Each structure stands twice: as structure tokens, then as C-alpha cells.
Length: 204
Image (cartoon, rainbow, N blue to C red; front, side, top):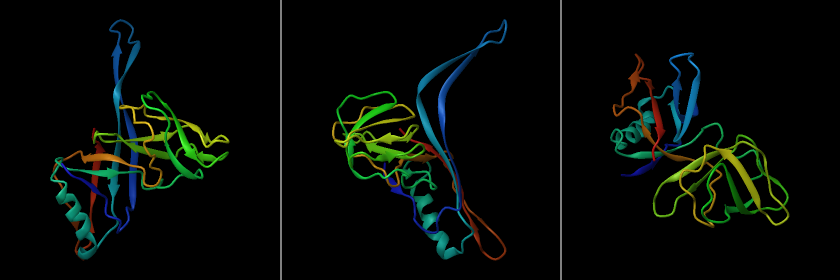
């Protein structure tokens, strides 16, 4: 299995990006009261739409889709409209301490006393041993202290604890994704302009 990078040009024209929680709902047959069971396994989902392209410009995207071989290979997917943080992101941030779980993460290596990440910013990190990459959205502003430490509050929860000193990815923060449909294709019109659209979901 190979993980590819999205082509850089032509740029994505329109996208739908979000997260699907893994919930099971039980309803009482008596009064229809709902009980929700939250399970691990929330995943990022995306729809990418490319602009109309001539054959020369469409070729890179056609080749990319073909190389995915349906769902056999993966690519690093991200939110195209949030490729860099709104916070300063200053410093060389990393995980501070192993075995962290839940929806907070203690980090260090930031520039001191700054709003390093703002609500809606993304960050990611790789899991030691080739166990993938996890992507999170910050849900509260993260402010570094005088020593460059900051606690990040985010969603979805950590699936696999990152290693101590694992670097954080802030620019083009991404996660491995696979196509939701193994079939790929493209449309063309009477003047040979290509239309390409595809859907993907986080792979883990």
C-alpha cells in the first residue's frame, strides 16, 4: 500500500470536508426515548471537486486517481480551505510526554506566550512504527506559556497515543484517506473540458 499526495494544480475548486462520529442509537419500543452509544472510530470525510480543465491539466488528476487503484492505495487528505493555522504556529512544536489519550494533548517547543493555534485550526502527527497519522481540529484557542508549553483541546479524540517528542504537523495537516468508491471516472463536454469529482474517507 502506497500513500500519495494530492496534485497541487489545478487547485481544488470546491470541497465538502467534515467528520463522521461513530454513534449507535438505541430507541425504546415503549416511548421512543433515545440512548446514544459513542464508540471509537470517528473519521474524516471529504468530497473534492476540480475546476473545468483541458486534457493537459486534467492528466495529473487522472493519473492520481488511477494510481489509487480503487481503495488499494491511499492519499494524504486535508481541508483545502484551512491549509495553514490562523494562530501564529510559531516554534517547533512536539508532543510532550507519551501515553496521552482523550481530547487534550500537552505539547512544547512553541514560541513563548502566543496564541499558537486558534479555534478551527488543524494539527496532525505521525504514529511511531508506521501506524498511520492522526488529524485533529482545535476547539479552543491554544496559548503557549513562558516556556513554550501549550495544552491543545481538540476533536476527534486520540485513537493511538503519539510518542513523546513526536513533531506536530501544522501546514497541510492531513490524514491518510481512501476513495469511498473503487470506481473512478471523469466527465467531458463538447469542447473537451474535463470534470473530476471524488469522495474519500479517513483510512485507519
